[in-house]
Length: 106
Image (tube, rainbow, N blue to C red; front, side):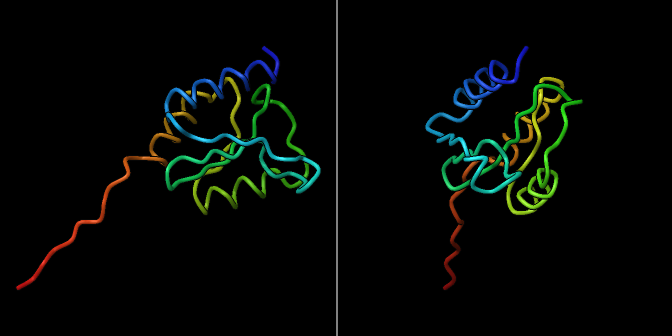
């Protein structure tokens, strides 16, 4: 499976898991090495760098930006071999949105 067909299937799966999410394709020429996709869901975000396989080479700065964005919210390389793990991690990262619990004291 090529990278573009894998990416198309992955985007469909993400939209199914997170209805109403916004998925943006980042401009590779704007910030070299920044991940391919930005996913916005409610008050959360994640970035994914899509690769055709686990062995696909990483470009300059990609590892740096994945580490940086993962420390801020969620960032990961995704390829067919780790697709399920990444989708599970996205579910944990996006988690249920809970309202703040207010306690009233007398």
